[in-house]
Length: 321
Ligand code: NDP
Image (cartoon, rainbow, N blue to C red; front, side):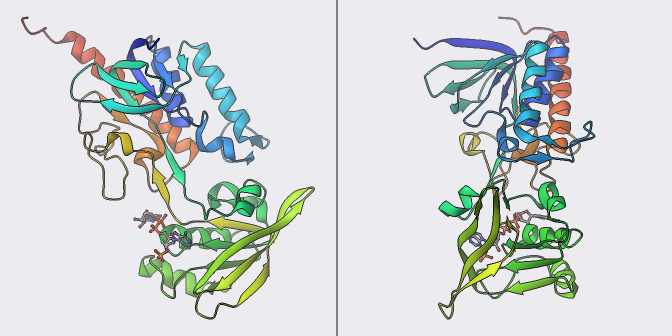
Protein backbone atom coordinates (compact mmCIF):
# COMPACT_ATOMS: atom_id res chain seq x y z
CA UNK A 1 0.00 0.00 0.00
CA UNK A 2 1.26 3.48 -0.85
CA UNK A 3 2.74 5.29 2.14
CA UNK A 4 3.51 8.89 3.04
CA UNK A 5 6.92 9.80 4.47
CA UNK A 6 7.95 13.15 5.91
CA UNK A 7 11.32 14.79 6.65
CA UNK A 8 12.61 18.25 7.43
CA UNK A 9 15.04 17.89 4.53
CA UNK A 10 14.04 15.88 1.49
CA UNK A 11 16.88 15.22 -0.96
CA UNK A 12 16.38 13.94 -4.51
CA UNK A 13 19.42 12.31 -6.06
CA UNK A 14 22.25 10.10 -4.84
CA UNK A 15 25.36 11.40 -6.62
CA UNK A 16 28.08 13.40 -4.83
CA UNK A 17 25.78 16.46 -4.48
CA UNK A 18 22.83 14.61 -2.91
CA UNK A 19 24.97 12.45 -0.63
CA UNK A 20 27.08 15.37 0.58
CA UNK A 21 23.91 17.35 1.29
CA UNK A 22 22.66 14.32 3.24
CA UNK A 23 25.87 14.04 5.28
CA UNK A 24 25.74 17.72 6.27
CA UNK A 25 21.99 17.74 6.97
CA UNK A 26 22.23 14.56 9.04
CA UNK A 27 25.14 15.89 11.07
CA UNK A 28 23.06 19.02 11.73
CA UNK A 29 20.45 16.74 13.32
CA UNK A 30 17.90 17.28 10.54
CA UNK A 31 17.33 13.55 9.83
CA UNK A 32 17.25 13.95 6.03
CA UNK A 33 15.43 11.57 3.73
CA UNK A 34 17.20 10.89 0.42
CA UNK A 35 15.40 9.35 -2.56
CA UNK A 36 18.08 7.70 -4.69
CA UNK A 37 16.55 7.82 -8.16
CA UNK A 38 16.93 5.57 -11.15
CA UNK A 39 20.75 5.36 -11.03
CA UNK A 40 21.87 5.11 -7.38
CA UNK A 41 25.28 6.78 -7.12
CA UNK A 42 24.76 8.78 -10.31
CA UNK A 43 27.26 9.34 -13.10
CA UNK A 44 30.22 8.27 -10.93
CA UNK A 45 28.98 4.71 -11.10
CA UNK A 46 29.74 4.57 -14.83
CA UNK A 47 33.36 5.68 -14.43
CA UNK A 48 36.23 3.41 -13.50
CA UNK A 49 39.45 4.97 -12.09
CA UNK A 50 39.04 8.27 -10.23
CA UNK A 51 42.25 10.16 -9.52
CA UNK A 52 40.98 13.69 -8.99
CA UNK A 53 38.72 13.31 -5.98
CA UNK A 54 40.79 14.71 -3.11
CA UNK A 55 41.72 12.50 -0.18
CA UNK A 56 42.98 9.40 -1.96
CA UNK A 57 46.66 9.04 -2.80
CA UNK A 58 45.98 6.14 -5.18
CA UNK A 59 43.32 5.81 -7.86
CA UNK A 60 39.93 4.70 -6.56
CA UNK A 61 36.95 3.31 -8.43
CA UNK A 62 33.93 5.57 -9.05
CA UNK A 63 31.34 2.99 -7.83
CA UNK A 64 33.42 2.34 -4.69
CA UNK A 65 33.58 6.08 -3.91
CA UNK A 66 29.80 6.32 -4.17
CA UNK A 67 29.32 3.27 -1.90
CA UNK A 68 31.54 4.97 0.67
CA UNK A 69 29.62 8.25 0.41
CA UNK A 70 26.32 6.40 0.78
CA UNK A 71 27.61 4.47 3.80
CA UNK A 72 28.84 7.72 5.35
CA UNK A 73 25.47 9.41 4.78
CA UNK A 74 23.62 6.45 6.35
CA UNK A 75 26.01 6.18 9.30
CA UNK A 76 25.37 9.79 10.30
CA UNK A 77 21.60 9.38 10.14
CA UNK A 78 20.24 9.67 6.58
CA UNK A 79 17.09 7.75 5.71
CA UNK A 80 17.94 6.19 2.33
CA UNK A 81 14.99 5.44 0.06
CA UNK A 82 15.09 3.31 -3.08
CA UNK A 83 12.56 4.98 -5.33
CA UNK A 84 12.35 7.21 -8.40
CA UNK A 85 10.36 10.42 -8.28
CA UNK A 86 7.93 10.91 -11.13
CA UNK A 87 6.28 14.20 -10.12
CA UNK A 88 6.59 17.00 -7.59
CA UNK A 89 4.31 19.68 -6.16
CA UNK A 90 6.28 22.72 -5.05
CA UNK A 91 3.26 25.05 -4.75
CA UNK A 92 3.16 24.88 -0.97
CA UNK A 93 5.10 23.52 2.02
CA UNK A 94 5.76 20.83 2.85
CA UNK A 95 6.91 20.15 -0.70
CA UNK A 96 5.65 16.87 -2.15
CA UNK A 97 7.32 14.29 -4.37
CA UNK A 98 5.60 11.16 -5.67
CA UNK A 99 7.53 7.94 -6.25
CA UNK A 100 6.90 5.59 -9.15
CA UNK A 101 5.34 3.05 -6.79
CA UNK A 102 2.87 5.65 -5.52
CA UNK A 103 4.58 6.58 -2.22
CA UNK A 104 4.51 10.24 -1.22
CA UNK A 105 7.58 12.03 0.17
CA UNK A 106 7.13 15.34 1.93
CA UNK A 107 9.90 17.77 2.86
CA UNK A 108 9.85 21.05 4.78
CA UNK A 109 12.78 21.86 2.54
CA UNK A 110 13.79 20.23 -0.73
CA UNK A 111 17.30 19.75 -2.11
CA UNK A 112 17.30 18.83 -5.78
CA UNK A 113 20.42 16.93 -6.82
CA UNK A 114 19.06 14.92 -9.72
CA UNK A 115 22.18 15.50 -11.83
CA UNK A 116 22.62 15.49 -15.57
CA UNK A 117 22.99 12.74 -18.09
CA UNK A 118 25.82 12.88 -20.63
CA UNK A 119 24.56 12.33 -24.11
CA UNK A 120 26.13 9.52 -26.07
CA UNK A 121 25.88 8.59 -29.73
CA UNK A 122 23.68 5.61 -29.00
CA UNK A 123 25.87 2.97 -30.65
CA UNK A 124 25.87 -0.55 -29.23
CA UNK A 125 29.68 -0.71 -29.54
CA UNK A 126 30.01 2.60 -27.69
CA UNK A 127 28.03 1.19 -24.75
CA UNK A 128 30.34 -1.83 -24.63
CA UNK A 129 33.48 0.28 -24.18
CA UNK A 130 32.15 2.91 -21.75
CA UNK A 131 34.80 3.18 -19.04
CA UNK A 132 37.23 1.21 -21.24
CA UNK A 133 38.27 3.92 -23.68
CA UNK A 134 34.92 5.62 -24.26
CA UNK A 135 34.32 8.55 -21.93
CA UNK A 136 32.20 11.68 -21.66
CA UNK A 137 34.64 13.56 -19.43
CA UNK A 138 38.15 14.54 -20.52
CA UNK A 139 38.96 16.16 -17.17
CA UNK A 140 38.15 12.87 -15.46
CA UNK A 141 39.79 10.44 -17.86
CA UNK A 142 42.28 12.37 -20.05
CA UNK A 143 45.13 11.49 -17.73
CA UNK A 144 44.82 7.83 -18.68
CA UNK A 145 45.73 8.61 -22.30
CA UNK A 146 49.27 9.91 -21.85
CA UNK A 147 51.10 9.80 -25.19
CA UNK A 148 48.14 7.99 -26.76
CA UNK A 149 45.86 8.93 -29.66
CA UNK A 150 42.34 10.03 -28.92
CA UNK A 151 39.35 11.57 -30.68
CA UNK A 152 36.65 13.92 -29.45
CA UNK A 153 33.19 13.95 -31.02
CA UNK A 154 31.25 17.24 -31.08
CA UNK A 155 31.51 20.83 -32.24
CA UNK A 156 30.41 22.88 -29.23
CA UNK A 157 32.38 24.62 -26.47
CA UNK A 158 32.70 21.42 -24.49
CA UNK A 159 34.15 19.43 -27.41
CA UNK A 160 36.70 22.13 -28.19
CA UNK A 161 37.66 22.61 -24.53
CA UNK A 162 38.00 18.86 -24.10
CA UNK A 163 40.16 18.56 -27.24
CA UNK A 164 42.42 21.36 -25.97
CA UNK A 165 42.61 19.79 -22.51
CA UNK A 166 43.47 16.40 -23.97
CA UNK A 167 46.53 17.82 -25.76
CA UNK A 168 48.17 18.05 -22.32
CA UNK A 169 48.12 14.25 -22.17
CA UNK A 170 47.59 12.66 -25.57
CA UNK A 171 50.10 12.63 -28.41
CA UNK A 172 47.40 13.36 -30.99
CA UNK A 173 43.80 14.58 -30.74
CA UNK A 174 41.29 14.37 -33.57
CA UNK A 175 38.12 16.41 -33.32
CA UNK A 176 35.32 14.77 -35.28
CA UNK A 177 32.37 16.98 -36.15
CA UNK A 178 29.25 16.09 -38.10
CA UNK A 179 29.16 19.43 -39.95
CA UNK A 180 31.70 21.75 -41.60
CA UNK A 181 31.35 24.51 -39.01
CA UNK A 182 31.88 24.51 -35.26
CA UNK A 183 29.32 25.81 -32.82
CA UNK A 184 32.04 26.72 -30.26
CA UNK A 185 33.00 30.34 -29.47
CA UNK A 186 35.50 31.92 -31.85
CA UNK A 187 38.22 32.33 -29.24
CA UNK A 188 38.11 28.59 -28.54
CA UNK A 189 38.11 27.80 -32.26
CA UNK A 190 41.19 29.99 -32.73
CA UNK A 191 43.00 28.07 -30.00
CA UNK A 192 41.89 24.77 -31.50
CA UNK A 193 43.10 25.55 -35.02
CA UNK A 194 46.40 26.90 -33.68
CA UNK A 195 47.20 23.74 -31.74
CA UNK A 196 49.58 21.50 -33.71
CA UNK A 197 48.46 18.36 -31.84
CA UNK A 198 44.83 18.74 -33.00
CA UNK A 199 43.39 17.68 -36.32
CA UNK A 200 39.77 18.43 -37.22
CA UNK A 201 37.79 15.98 -39.31
CA UNK A 202 34.68 17.61 -40.79
CA UNK A 203 31.32 16.25 -41.94
CA UNK A 204 32.00 12.96 -40.27
CA UNK A 205 30.06 10.66 -37.99
CA UNK A 206 31.22 7.73 -35.90
CA UNK A 207 29.52 4.51 -36.92
CA UNK A 208 31.23 1.99 -34.69
CA UNK A 209 33.70 1.75 -31.84
CA UNK A 210 36.21 -1.02 -32.37
CA UNK A 211 38.14 -2.65 -29.56
CA UNK A 212 39.51 -5.65 -27.75
CA UNK A 213 37.55 -7.44 -25.11
CA UNK A 214 40.37 -8.96 -23.08
CA UNK A 215 41.66 -6.77 -21.65
CA UNK A 216 38.85 -4.47 -22.75
CA UNK A 217 39.92 -1.33 -24.56
CA UNK A 218 39.27 0.81 -27.61
CA UNK A 219 41.59 0.33 -30.58
CA UNK A 220 39.82 2.39 -33.22
CA UNK A 221 36.60 3.67 -34.74
CA UNK A 222 34.77 3.31 -38.01
CA UNK A 223 33.69 6.67 -39.42
CA UNK A 224 31.69 7.88 -42.39
CA UNK A 225 32.04 11.12 -44.31
CA UNK A 226 28.51 12.44 -44.65
CA UNK A 227 29.17 14.27 -47.91
CA UNK A 228 30.95 11.52 -49.83
CA UNK A 229 29.51 8.51 -47.99
CA UNK A 230 33.08 7.13 -47.72
CA UNK A 231 33.72 4.88 -44.76
CA UNK A 232 37.12 4.50 -43.13
CA UNK A 233 38.83 3.24 -39.99
CA UNK A 234 40.79 5.41 -37.57
CA UNK A 235 43.20 3.83 -35.11
CA UNK A 236 43.00 5.35 -31.64
CA UNK A 237 43.06 4.50 -27.94
CA UNK A 238 40.29 6.69 -26.56
CA UNK A 239 37.04 8.25 -27.71
CA UNK A 240 35.54 11.23 -25.89
CA UNK A 241 31.93 12.05 -26.58
CA UNK A 242 31.16 15.74 -26.05
CA UNK A 243 27.78 16.23 -27.67
CA UNK A 244 26.05 17.77 -24.67
CA UNK A 245 24.46 16.88 -21.36
CA UNK A 246 20.81 16.74 -20.44
CA UNK A 247 20.06 18.02 -16.94
CA UNK A 248 17.46 15.87 -15.21
CA UNK A 249 14.90 18.61 -14.69
CA UNK A 250 11.77 17.47 -16.55
CA UNK A 251 9.68 17.03 -13.41
CA UNK A 252 10.42 20.60 -12.25
CA UNK A 253 9.53 22.39 -15.48
CA UNK A 254 6.64 24.79 -14.91
CA UNK A 255 7.35 24.97 -11.19
CA UNK A 256 10.96 26.18 -10.94
CA UNK A 257 12.95 28.63 -13.05
CA UNK A 258 14.71 26.58 -15.69
CA UNK A 259 17.21 28.11 -18.17
CA UNK A 260 16.68 27.71 -21.92
CA UNK A 261 19.20 24.85 -21.95
CA UNK A 262 17.30 22.97 -19.24
CA UNK A 263 19.50 23.65 -16.19
CA UNK A 264 17.87 24.81 -12.94
CA UNK A 265 18.52 28.46 -12.14
CA UNK A 266 20.09 29.22 -8.77
CA UNK A 267 20.86 32.57 -7.20
CA UNK A 268 24.46 33.84 -7.35
CA UNK A 269 26.77 32.36 -4.68
CA UNK A 270 23.90 30.19 -3.47
CA UNK A 271 21.94 27.03 -4.18
CA UNK A 272 18.61 28.83 -3.64
CA UNK A 273 16.09 28.45 -6.44
CA UNK A 274 13.20 30.84 -7.11
CA UNK A 275 11.07 28.98 -4.52
CA UNK A 276 11.97 29.62 -0.89
CA UNK A 277 13.01 26.39 0.78
CA UNK A 278 13.92 24.64 -2.49
CA UNK A 279 17.64 24.33 -3.25
CA UNK A 280 19.51 22.85 -6.21
CA UNK A 281 23.00 21.35 -6.10
CA UNK A 282 25.39 19.56 -8.44
CA UNK A 283 25.13 19.01 -12.17
CA UNK A 284 21.41 19.78 -12.31
CA UNK A 285 22.42 23.46 -11.94
CA UNK A 286 26.03 23.39 -13.20
CA UNK A 287 26.67 23.36 -16.93
CA UNK A 288 30.30 24.42 -16.61
CA UNK A 289 32.35 22.43 -14.06
CA UNK A 290 30.45 19.12 -13.73
CA UNK A 291 33.01 17.55 -11.38
CA UNK A 292 32.27 15.22 -8.46
CA UNK A 293 34.12 17.55 -6.13
CA UNK A 294 32.22 20.66 -7.27
CA UNK A 295 28.93 18.75 -6.99
CA UNK A 296 29.88 17.71 -3.45
CA UNK A 297 30.72 21.34 -2.69
CA UNK A 298 27.33 22.63 -3.79
CA UNK A 299 25.64 19.74 -1.94
CA UNK A 300 27.29 20.99 1.22
CA UNK A 301 26.12 24.54 0.45
CA UNK A 302 22.53 23.36 -0.09
CA UNK A 303 22.42 21.55 3.26
CA UNK A 304 23.80 24.60 5.09
CA UNK A 305 21.29 26.86 3.35
CA UNK A 306 18.41 24.45 4.14
CA UNK A 307 19.47 24.37 7.79
CA UNK A 308 19.57 28.18 7.95
CA UNK A 309 16.18 28.41 6.24
CA UNK A 310 14.59 25.97 8.70
CA UNK A 311 16.07 27.85 11.66
CA UNK A 312 14.65 31.13 10.31
CA UNK A 313 11.21 29.53 9.85
CA UNK A 314 11.23 28.19 13.40
CA UNK A 315 12.16 31.59 14.85
CA UNK A 316 9.37 33.37 12.96
CA UNK A 317 6.12 34.06 14.86
CA UNK A 318 3.44 31.61 13.61
CA UNK A 319 0.49 33.18 11.78
CA UNK A 320 -2.80 32.97 13.69
CA UNK A 321 -4.95 30.02 12.57
P1 NDP B 1 26.33 22.05 -27.38
O1 NDP B 1 24.91 21.70 -27.43
O2 NDP B 1 26.73 23.48 -27.44
O3 NDP B 1 27.12 21.33 -28.57
C1 NDP B 1 26.90 19.98 -28.83
C2 NDP B 1 27.71 19.63 -30.07
O4 NDP B 1 27.59 18.25 -30.29
C3 NDP B 1 27.24 20.35 -31.33
O5 NDP B 1 28.33 20.75 -32.10
C4 NDP B 1 26.43 19.27 -32.04
O6 NDP B 1 26.51 19.35 -33.45
C5 NDP B 1 27.11 18.01 -31.61
N1 NDP B 1 26.18 16.89 -31.57
C6 NDP B 1 24.99 16.82 -30.92
N2 NDP B 1 24.44 15.61 -31.08
C7 NDP B 1 25.30 14.90 -31.86
C8 NDP B 1 25.29 13.58 -32.38
N3 NDP B 1 24.29 12.74 -32.10
N4 NDP B 1 26.33 13.20 -33.14
C9 NDP B 1 27.35 14.03 -33.41
N5 NDP B 1 27.43 15.29 -32.94
C10 NDP B 1 26.40 15.71 -32.18
O7 NDP B 1 26.88 21.31 -26.04
P2 NDP B 1 28.15 21.65 -25.15
O8 NDP B 1 28.23 20.58 -24.13
O9 NDP B 1 29.34 21.90 -25.98
O10 NDP B 1 27.76 23.00 -24.41
C11 NDP B 1 26.56 23.10 -23.63
C12 NDP B 1 26.41 24.54 -23.13
O11 NDP B 1 27.42 24.82 -22.16
C13 NDP B 1 26.57 25.56 -24.24
O12 NDP B 1 25.72 26.64 -23.98
C14 NDP B 1 28.00 25.99 -24.09
O13 NDP B 1 28.25 27.29 -24.62
C15 NDP B 1 28.19 25.94 -22.58
N6 NDP B 1 29.59 25.74 -22.23
C16 NDP B 1 30.34 26.82 -21.94
C17 NDP B 1 31.66 26.69 -21.63
C18 NDP B 1 32.43 27.92 -21.33
O14 NDP B 1 31.85 28.98 -21.28
N7 NDP B 1 33.71 27.82 -21.14
C19 NDP B 1 32.32 25.39 -21.58
C20 NDP B 1 31.46 24.29 -21.94
C21 NDP B 1 30.14 24.48 -22.25
P3 NDP B 1 25.80 20.53 -34.28
O15 NDP B 1 26.69 21.71 -34.07
O16 NDP B 1 25.79 20.02 -35.67
O17 NDP B 1 24.44 20.71 -33.68
